Image (spheres, rainbow, N blue to C red):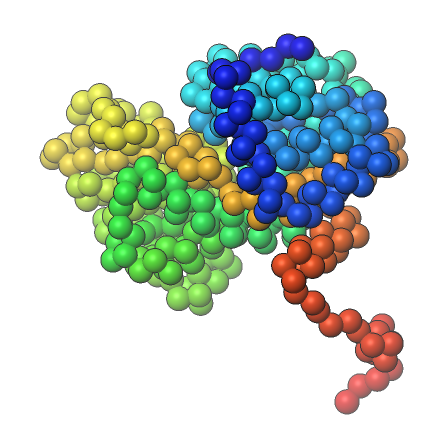
Length: 419
C-alpha cells in the first residue's frame, strides 16, 4: 500500500485519540454498524481530501465499513494530526497522504496521489480535489458518480463552476445541510476558533475589542462565544441582512476601516479574498492580533502585509509571527493566516462532527444509490437524511420531543380552517 505520513511510530497515540473521539460520535457509530451489515459502498473507490483528524478517521472507518476503498489526503497543510494519519494507515489499511506542515509542493503531490487512486466518488473540504480533477484529469472526471463537499468555501466554488457550465459531475452540498450548517459551523467553529486563538496566544478575551469579519453561521458562533467570555464584539459585514441581524443580536456593526482603529483581536470567517488588507493594518494599534478561520489562507492579505512591514516577520511564539510596521507598531499573525481552529487547536469537538460526518456518510450512500440518475449540478442533502440524523442525535442526548396529532397534521395540510 502506498502512503506518505510523518512517522508510523505515532500510530499507538493516534489509535487512542481516534477511540476517544468515537465516544462522542454515537450517530456515526450507528451508521457504521449498519454499513458493516449492508455494504452499500461495496467495490467503490473513493478519494477524500479532508482535515486529517481523529473525527475524520471515524468517518473514513465508516466508509470502509460500508465496503469503500478509500484514499485520504489533507485539505490543509497545518491541520493534519500525524498520529491519526499513522493509525489510519496501520490499523485501517487506508492509504493516507498527509504530513503536518507540508509545503505547497508536497500538498499538491498528496492531492495528485489521492486522484491517482482512481475514485468513482470523492469527498472534499474546500473543493481542491474536485478542482484538480476538472483541470487535469478528464478520464477520472468521466467516472465520478458524485462528490461530497462540506465547506462553505467549497460550495461557493462549486456553485460558480455549475453556473459557468464547467462542472462535470454531480456534487452534494453537505455543508448546506441543516445538520451540518447550523451546528458544525456555528457551535463547532465558534468554540474551536476561540480554542485555537487562546492556545496560540494565551490571550485573555475578557475586555478585549474582538472584530469578527463575517456574520455567517461561523461568524455568529465565534461572536457569541467571544461575548460569552467577556469580549466587546464588533462585526464587519458586506451583506445588509446579516449586518442588520448582527446589530439586532446586540453586536456593534461598522466597516473594517473603522474597526481596524479600535480592534485588539481580528478574526476573518468569510470565505472571501483579502478581507483584511494593508490599508486596514496600517490603522491597527500596536499589538493587534490577526487570525483567520475561513477555509483558505487568503482572507488576510499577507503579501500586502509583507510589503508594508519594515522588517521580515519573526516567530515570537509557536504559530505567532510578528510583523513590524511603520512607527514600530507590531501586528501578530496567527498560524500563517491558515485555519486557526485546526492549525493551533484540534478542530471541532467530536460531538458536533458526529452529525456532520453521519450526514456525509449517508449522503455518500444516497448518491451511490442514485447513480446515473443524478444530474450534473450542486444537489442538496435529502430531508430524510437530515431528519434521521437529528432524531438520532436527540436520542443520544436523552432528549424527547412531541409528535403531531392527527388533528394537527390535518390542520397543517388544509386551507379551509381560518379564524
